[in-house]
Amino acid sequence: MNSFNTHDDTLKIVEKYSNSNVDIQTFNQSQYPRLVVEDFTPLPSKGQTGKDGWYPPGHGDVFPSLKNSGKLHALLSKGKEYVFIANSDNLGAIVDLKILSHLIKNKNEYCMEVTPKTLADVKGGTLISYEERVQLLEIAQVPDEHASSSTLVLGSDLLACCETRWVNLNAIKRLVESDELKMEIIPNPKEVDGIKVLQLETAAGAAIRFFDNAIGINVPRSRFLPVKATSDLLLVQSDLYTLEDGFIIRNKARTNPANPSIELGPEFKKVGNFLSRFKSIPSIVDLDSLKVSGDVWFGAGIVLKGKVSITAKPGVKLEIPDAAVLENKNINGPEDLARHISDNGLPGSDCKPIFVQFDRGDATLGSSLSTCNLILLLSHELHLTVS
Image (tube, rainbow, N blue to C red):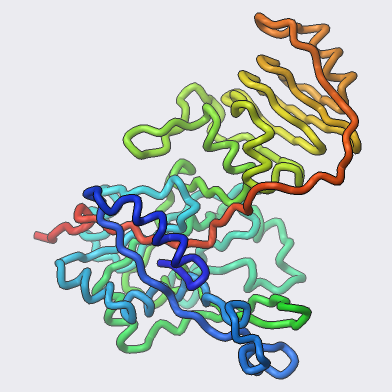
C-alpha cells in the first residue's frame, strides 16, 4: 500500500521485478485534505492545492483502501483467507506458517504480534484489555501528564506492538461493508508554510477490537527489526546479522539477547553521509553500546566491543584507523586515540590516527531515510484450507 507521496517511487522499484516470478501488487491509500487549525477548513480551500494540502490518513486506512482499490475482492476471488500486513521498515517481518496455522485452527480473525518492551519502544503502542476486548493503546492517546510514566513506557508486563498483523480477509469485508470500523482518531499537528494544520489519522492496530477472537502473540525480538534511522541501519548492515535465503538471520556468536544501543550524531543522519563515513561497517557482535558525535570517520576492519564512546570536538576531523579494536573505550579526541593505539597497536598495521582542522561550511549530502511505506506481503502460501 502506497500513498500519493510514495506511489511513483514504488512503481520504479517494482518494475525491476517485472520479469521475475514474484507477484508484486500495489495500490494507493486514501488522501485527505489537511485542516487549518484556526477555523478547521480544508487547507486546499485556502489556495494550497498542491501535495502539501493533502495527507495520507495513517495505516488504519489499509482496510477501506483494500476494498476501494478492488484488491480485497480480487484476493477473495482467488480463495485467499488471510493477509499478512507489516510496516516496510520491519526487516524481521516474515511469513510464519506456524502462526497462520494457529489462526486458522482457532478461527482468530485478527492477530497482532507483540514483543517485550525495551527503552527503544517508548513511542510505540501496547495491547490492553478494555471492556472485555483486546484493544490498542497508543502513547499519542495518553494525556501528556501521564505519557512519561515509567509504567506506561517500560512496565514489567508491557508488550510492544511489532506493527505486524494477520487479518482474515472475509472479516475485513464484513466490517468495511457494514461500516463498523470506527477506529479512534489520532490528531497529528503539522505546519505547512507557517500555517498550523491538523491531520486526523487512524492506526491499523486500533482495529483489533472490532474483530472476533482477536489475539496478540508474544514473538521473539528477532521478528521486530525496524529500520527507522541510520543507527538501525548500522545494526542490520553489520556482522550482527546475515542474509540467508532472503531472511535476516541474527549471528549466533552474539550471546547477549539484546541488540547493542547505538547513538549516532547528526553527521550520520542522512544515508549518504552515513555510508560515506564507513570504509566498512565495524564488527559489533560483542558491542554493548556505541555513542558517536562530531566529525568521526571509520576505517575498514574495525572491531567495537563493550561500551564505546567516540567524540570529535568542533573543528576536528577524527579518523578511526583501519583494523582498530576499541573495547570499553571513551575516545574524546585524537590524543585519546593516539594513546590507545600506542598502548595496544593495530593488528598487522603501522597506522597512525589522522586528524585535521576543516571548514564546517561544507554542504550536506545524501537523502533522508524514508520509512513511511506500508507493505502487504501476499503469497500463495497464505491460502490454507480448513479441513
